[in-house]
Each structure stands twice: as structure tokens, then as C-alpha cells.
Image 1: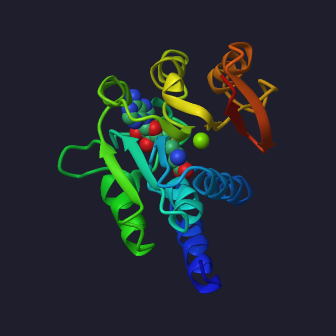
Image 2: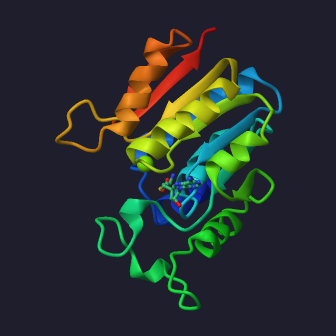
Length: 213
Ligand code: SAH
Ligand code: MG
């Protein structure tokens, strides 16, 4: 990828609304490039598109290796994104029905980044998609609902779909409860305790694990 394109994509990622600090986003980009180089035409999937910020970071690494990033979201936000909660954004409310709708924002981010050939949005509930998904994943990024039930359900539904030697990335992993909610940290602990995943790297609240068996 030439430098101009890379700069354009990083600018698009930074400009998108979302919850991915730049250093963690670049770590996602690096691991996507590594996975893409290791597995030709790699299949990558993220749970939790929001407005496309992390999808762009993943795609910077994916594009140059011919990988595809599937990005799953029902686009109505998690509990903590709803009105009255910490991460509510009035601009994302659809006046037609008063519900959050991040899909147009996601589409605009991906279109502006000219990534429509690399990032494929899947609009729907993560568990419904998981029930019908059988393609092994060379990279799985879990960043969907962070509530107790939903985070564990995503881990249960998706983690076994990671290919051997593939990567499981989990966002918002906080050792210290003062820094954030527990469920992403709990599923990270479960992944390590299962013996199927080994820690590769950490960057901020991003944990990268490799499937070893
Ligand atoms: N990765 C994004 C942030 C994701 S926020 C970024 O980089 O900015 C979490 C997202 O998970 C929200 O968009 C929410 O709609 C989605 N989500 C929560 N529960 C879900 C579920 N059960 N199925 C699909 N998407 C879900
Ligand atoms: Mg997150």
C-alpha cells in the first residue's frame, strides 16, 4: 500500500465516530496485516461495527493482503449507547423512529475510505449471524455488547470459529475494575483458561490471542 493511501485510511479511521484509540487501532491494523500475510485470502470478522472506525483500522492491514473484513452489527447500539447512558450520541438517532441507527454512518465511513471491496457489513444480531456462520475465521475481533450476558454469549458463539493459528482480538479488557466493565476481561480470562488461546500482545485495552489448539 502506498503511503498516500495509508495516510488517507488512517485519516478516515480517525475521523469516524467510535471507541478505538489510534494506538490500539494501529495494533489492529498490524495484526490484520500479519494474519493476512500468513493466510491467503483471509477471512476476518468483527462484532461491533458502530460507525466503522475499527473496521477501517482492520482493513488497512487486510486490504493489501486481499483479506476481507466482515463487520457484524444490528446498528441500534449497545445498552451503554442508549439515551441516558454514558455513550449516547443524539446525532445517531433516526428521527423516523427515535432509535439509534449507526448504519448510514458506517456506510459513509467505508465509502469515504473506498473500502467497499474489503469491508462487508452484516446487519443483524451477532448470535443470529453466528448460528449460520461456518467459515473458519483467521481473525475474530470481539467488540460488541459489553454487558455480562451478551459478552459471554459472543465468546460462546464465536470463539470456536477461530481457525487454528488464527487470532482472537478482544477490546475493552481492563484488569482494574476502576478502568471499565468486567465482561470483556472475563472472556479474555476464559480464553486463556481454555488452553485454546495464548496471549500474543496487549495494547491498551486491546488483547491479541492466538488459537493454539
Ligand atoms: N468497534 C467499534 C465500537 C463498537 S461499539 C469502534 O471501533 O468504534 C459496540 C457495538 O456493538 C454497537 O454498535 C452495538 O450496536 C453492537 N452490538 C451490541 N450488541 C450486539 C448484538 N447482539 N448483535 C450485533 N451487534 C451488537
Ligand atoms: Mg470497544
